Length: 177
Image (cartoon, rainbow, N blue to C red; front, side):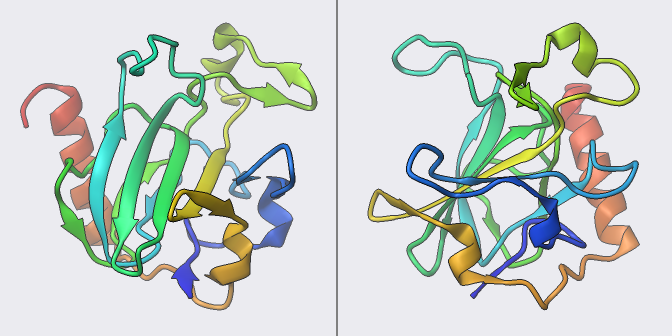
């Protein structure tokens, strides 16, 4: 079983489920702090790739926005997209289950209620389009994250863990790390 991606995640948070045309789950943390909600490693993982402010190999803009690829000890591959652009982790890092690895955002192409959310609306205080796009694959085949997610166990990072992750993120954003 894998850990849920953020504290207080439950099936009520899901805004789009896994299906034939959407090989992931989209979710929105509840409450006024959805934008910036800490994301955790679902199992012990190696950070494989950070999708940042660049173009992909086929030169398309990053439609999924900023994101993070993690390879778990189980062999599962975890992808988090539509995150903040800066992460408290680096490519190659080994992180333990429950370690803060990023923050929920609204980057990339975002659709809410069937309507594209323009960038200027995402910058307003309500941060329209905020959500997590969560993909899991095994040997290149996607499957529903809910089928292996432990919904009864909360991530257990501390306030100090959060402060350290935020400090690393801010330092990286300012070019200090």
